[in-house]
Image (tube, rainbow, N blue to C red; front, side):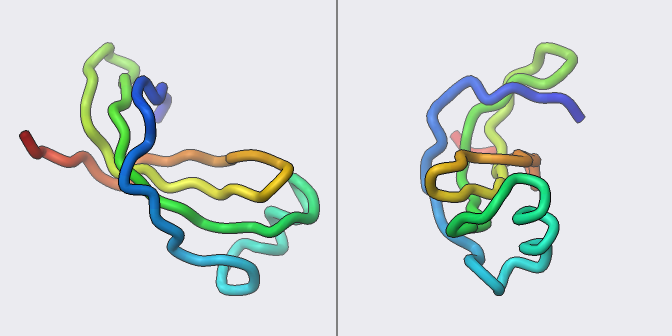
Length: 79
């Protein structure tokens, strides 16, 4: 699913780090060595059909390398 993040990511939280990340070997091979973390947060996203929704998103990030592989885990319906 294609989406674009259109707001700042809020309520950021680290889910896992280092060897606790299941895919750490793949991440290091593909993007390089770094202090890897799996993170989650809330952000407003624009979907392929143009709709804008609040979603919980997950991603991987490493210091000095950046953020990679964003994915929508669920949509949040709050006022």
